Amino acid sequence: MDANQQTRANPFGMDAECENCPELCETRERVVHGYGDVGADFLFVGEMPDDESDRTGVPFTGEKGEVLQNVLGYLGLNNSLPGDDEPELENAFLTYLTRCHAERSPTDDEIRTCEPYLNAEIRMINPEILVPVGQRALTEIATEYTTTPADEFDAEDDHATTIRGRGFEIVPMRDPGEQSEADREAFVDHFQSLMAGDYRQTKGRRSR
Image (cartoon, rainbow, N blue to C red):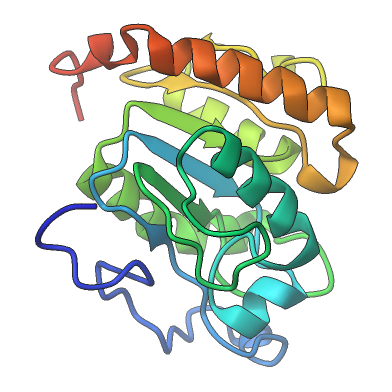
């Protein structure tokens, strides 16, 4: 973790009382901004907080989060037990496209409204690898950071593969709630091979 980092939770001090989407203010308990190591090489992006993340204020907590936290543990990026409400992440940062819980998928307008939060986190962290978790995150990340039409990417087919993006390598992950044991093993194996190689080779070639 960066020596200057004071907290893993919302380390950049983003608006915790955001009211840009009035409808979502009625369905959330709290705003869920990013969480983790601000010096991370690996940034994981999901669609939106579920009810457990809304409760804890930390992305990818609860049942679905336990799957991802377990994967991070195998990769040496999580030093706490899977299911921890405040995981001890090292070299990983977790966030969402949108920051408020609702019992439905976010609208395109809501994603666009939250986009400055995500863009700011990516810019300030400057990760090496983006991991879109689930189809919606993959579509949005591919739209922003690749030159390939986003509808050509599929979170199931592209799970645990590497996509060359603009300034980043992108490694899609299936939604944790849909993953099999084989999916988890495939992701761990692929990501370990990236970590063992020269994944930092894109540094210095980015244009923002």
